[in-house]
Image (cartoon, rainbow, N blue to C red; front, side, top):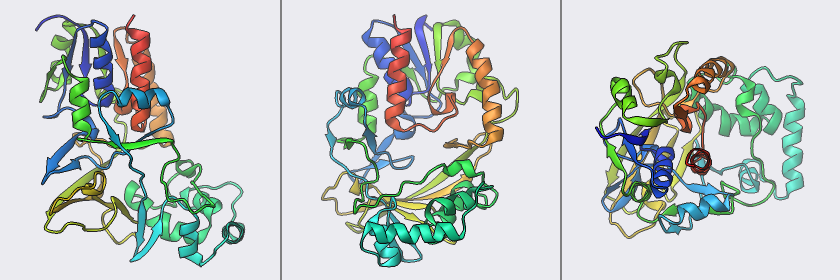
Amino acid sequence: MKKVDFLIVGAGLFGSVFAHEAISRGKSCLIVEKRNHVGGNVYTDQIEGIHVHTYGPHIFHTSNSRVWEFMNRFATFSRFTLNTLANYKGEIYNLPFNMNTFNRMWGVITPDEALRKIEEQRESHKTDTPKNLEEQAINLVGTDIYEKLIKGYTEKQWGRPCKVLPAFIIKRLPVRFTYDNNYFNDPYQGIPVGGYTHIIKKLLSGVQFMLNTDYLMDKERFDSIAEKVIYTGPIDAYFEYRFGELEYRSIRLETQTLNCTNYQGNAVINYTDRETPYTRIIEHKHFEPGTQSKTVISREYPAEWKKGDEPFYPVNDERNQALYKKYAALARAETNVIFGGRLGEFKYYDMDKVVESALVIAEKVLV
């Protein structure tokens, strides 16, 4: 293989943005990607003329005008405002918690009435030092919202009872005393026309890449051809799990094509009762409304992660944070490797933060 300035491990959003910036500054790059496609978790497929978010819903939202302008160089974004619904045993509530939620829950009309109701429930169960997620959530929003809209969903998501989950997982909960169903507060929000894969392919224009290629299986050879490595895979795997495995939660998506034009009337509906085995149903055509005669839905099932599975959500409890710090110390000692992205930094990232981080690192490195 030909010598390159940068070997980039992973063709997700971080690796693709960095590769674009490197190529545009005259640097040579090679990307190696374990999967059989580029794009990482933002990859979108096309089924029945509908762009399907293969690894779960991705709505681009940001308050960073620089990031927004950067992304708009590679796609036209249609305005999309996420209005998530919660289904609790057939009762429909708006998320995040707002006056529409409170009206449906208690029949209250004014913000003062809603606030009084929440404070009443908080005070009757208040714990000065919450010992677990359940106590913390009730301290924040009271018992009714916790029981119907938090408890079941959270226990499915994390695979553990709320009483054993640490309180710091829910440091705060968004509560709005307005009739505003917009899930995000960011001024820039949208879905790229043509899907996210379209953006990734534009970012990678002129970049050589290898799919179905596991960097760690041939690390020595790949390292030998690069001046520097940009690594976006799991940080513990890079160091051969020297201190043990970091924990993640995974998901399993069951995707179906249905012979109807509209299955649920909304892009995302969360199922917040404990008995429903999946956490949400995604109806992909509502991200980019079209006239297709069919629709595609995905049911999302949370799953316990084990080595070899796709890692989705870092388990950021005290044990894992202490373990990550050990790996981060090893990473800082690496002279020719830069660790980035969700897995490389063991950190949950929104898409705009991934783009911002890649641009910042590119500015430092590409001199």
